[in-house]
Amino acid sequence: MLSATVTDNSGMVASVSLSYRQGGQAPYTQVPMAPSGGDTYQGSIPGSAVTVRGLEYFLQASDPGGNTTTSEVNRVAVSVTDLVSRQTLPPASYRMVSLPLRPGDGSPQTILVDDLGPYDTTRWRFGRWSPSENAYHECTFNWSASTDDFAPGRGYWLITRDGGSFDVSGTSVPIAAPYSVLLQPWWNQIGNPFAFPVDWRAVSKDPVISDSLWDYTGSGYGITTLMQPWRGYWVENRGSSAVNVLIPPVEAAGATLVPAVVSHDILWEISLYASCDGVTDCGNRLGVALTASDGLDPLDVREPPPPWTHAWLYFSPDGRAPYASDFKAPFLDGASWEVSVALAGVEGSATVWVEGVEAVPEEFSVRLLDTQEGRVVDLRQTPAYEFLPERHAASRRLHLLAGVRAYVDEVVERLLPVPAEYQLAQNQPNPVLDRTEIRFQIPMVEGRAPQWVRLTVFDTLGRQVAVLLDGERGPGFHSVTWDACGPRGRSVPSGLHVYRMETQRGWAHTRKLVVLRGAQVGMQDP
Image (cartoon, rainbow, N blue to C red; front, top):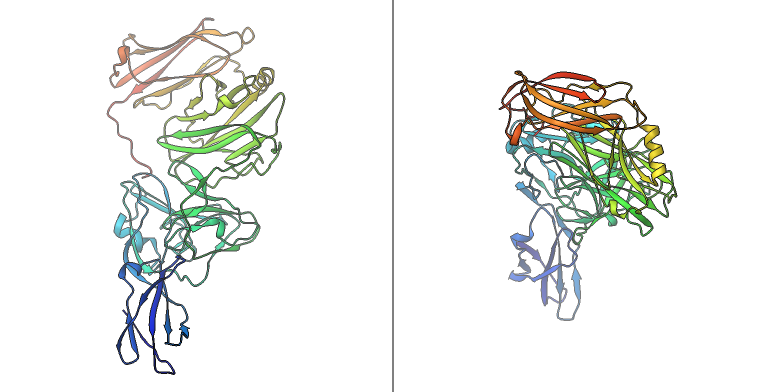
């Protein structure tokens, strides 16, 4: 309820009104104020309008002569208690979060521990990117309260094992003027400081600030034009010094997700994905465009850093920074793209797959080359490639080749190493919980002619358990996967087994492996 004293020189007041609006809204809602005795008038703003968005109002009075007086606009900072985040946290899935209010206490322990429990990285994990260090600050470890605690305009990573949400107490952000957020050189995690959507295109920013606002969808990055409250985003400062962006307190319309690259000059493109241990990265694109160049160009878009646990696919057209897209100029013979897959906090085999190969000209071969394992995949026939990372290896570098057959063959011949001898490697992982990969190599004996190879698993009594390979393979590095099953798909029991490789030239070698049933794997991350 609002009370106001209204007087007029003539002693006559014809009407008094109260106009109000929530933060971010354009039109005001007008309600009459009723006389309550003498020069006092009263009017009320419904409780539903008093929210964390903030509130603006003004009064207007008229006399019988048509003269009108309007008060200044008053702005109210609204306090809230235990306000629940509107962004639901799914189990074991990263989300970027932010606060659309000024918290009473911005420490993660105050805001999150009462909802998620004591900080334990096996239950939940929370942190924020430090552009100056090019690394994450994590709650309770290398945390800096002044730069990392919850505050409007800042974004954070949050993952919880069991999902859920969190609540916070504080006051609405002032809506009298745009909110200033300082962005350091390189990538910054930011948030919408207001409790209503804001159009990123309306944000006042220096030319060194990228126009791309990156959102995390749970399985990869995408570019959006809308800053939603409670969500976090990535923004790149391409300059060498810190600059401010000014976020206007104006509500935007619906969300818009846009491709990282939009061009009518694209002749063809392929989408690439990577996944490992339930973690997926999508939204990566390569191709050919009329306006592209062999070096960097506007179609090559840099990609934000991934969360702690990731299967991250990216390109490096400049040899340094990771990119989400890499387009090349038209060619006659062929082109090669370097594709990197970085893995962290995940276990087991990784898969890279592609979509859109049918858009590549029919006369071109499209192959994926793994020089580490000496494997070549014809992506027109098999649009996916699976590999088991080396222990302690942070990434795998691949090459995607597209061009006429002679060009692709020449690049494969030049990049692909040829083993000097036969070799049967120890299976990975060992012990075998559900499946394992066995790698082997074949030297070049009579040119690149294929050779017959047989790979068999036996029990300790010498009985055949499974035939993993019985056919021809060319010179190079190869692998097979065993699901720890015998004839008719029956699981083999726990215990010691041996596997043996034989070739048509009489070379043979045997190794041991252990099958372990009923084993439990501890969780490194939520």
